[in-house]
Length: 314
Image (cartoon, rainbow, N blue to C red; front, side, top):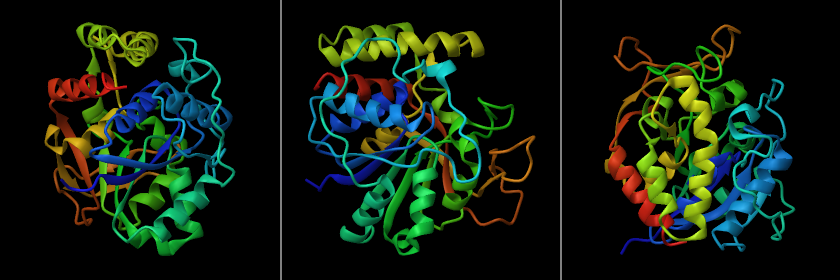
């Protein structure tokens, strides 16, 4: 049996981030979570670091190291998404405040130290929110860039265009300058854009499958999806809400669930009209060098089967 993949989850929970963290913590055969780094995004940093610890305790994994990172984007004012996730970021069920401590090290320093300590090419970064922590680490310690195994991130959109502006997906829009640094870094990147995550819809039968797991985690996940799906159903007229971030973790466990293309992805940082747009050269019409595997499709039934089976373990 091969060794589990070592990952750092960089996140801004968010109900779908929380489900992604739960999936990773429920999958120790495939995934070793070296630490969770919080960033400002869906809600401010004070809440994202707290929410990260709440989720670890929900999974009964209070020994996971959680670090607080950047409280604001590199160059822009923070934009948050309480309109989707509620004022806490994890609205829906009422969860107790975490007892486990926040680590004192800054998230950026933890990322740098970990990549320097672990053998080159063995650590995968899994950003589920704005890329501020990752880009800050790259700026502060350029030597780590070549040591990363892969970056698998949730962010961007091409055919689905935008969800926070007409042209941009939320995570990239919040810190386009950071995203630009990451996409230009030369690291092997796999992108889970809205094009694929909007196919991971929590329909009513899928919510009820979580609820009927008979464990506390299943009930909480069902209540989270009940809460945030009202926004997406109203906005898109879809039969349920997309579970964006768990796509990242599902890919690490079962990559065959996803299909995409290795293309060039460029982030717009100049125009206010299209700020944060991820311009994916899907049809190969430029001579720009491919820099990312941009996913376009997933086996939704396989994805939810995996997710439900793993949540049942917690």
